[in-house]
Image 1 (cartoon, rainbow, N blue to C red):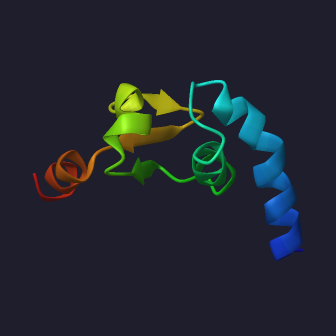
Image 2: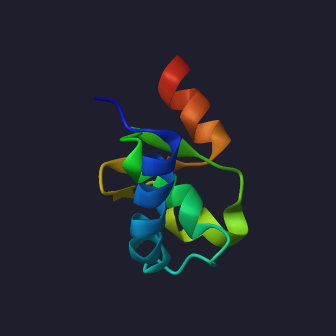
Length: 76
């Protein structure tokens, strides 16, 4: 049986403290947590201020990239 939207929200909330451990502000931790919970391969963000130190890193299977690098990875 598939997760309900409420189940997914609970999973994101459980992963948010783990995501916050990567020195992300509280408002950004759920974004990384959602990418982890959804098993995304890549999180593309232009937020250099908060995610910049994580660009190019893989956290729990999610590679964090700025838009330009993501486009380059796809188009070569």
